[in-house]
Image (tube, helix red, strand yellow):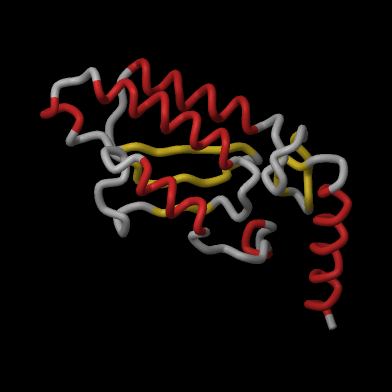
Length: 146
């Protein structure tokens, strides 16, 4: 079982549901995308990236805009990944910026964090949440061996 399988609270939180409603061009069908960020620490990074991308879409021809939508938002190798159906160079830059920023922001609380290893899985955590997550995962591993 991976570290991300062990994170509690995998669900679409109210904040992320509101995000989808805030950017209807990027999230035209609420059921057509998934989020696998298990905490809200990266919410601001995601919101900022969506705002920049949505601003770009406002300047594009409607026939191109209809093909650009979010499919998945998740954590991979300890940083944020946002996958869209299509991109442009500008959008790829926005996504790259969000990914780089996320590797310095705690995915749980949004404070300054760094990439850390938990049982060979990477997570971006602050100095407060790293020992908490490490202890929780270790405790669960011990309970599984009983």
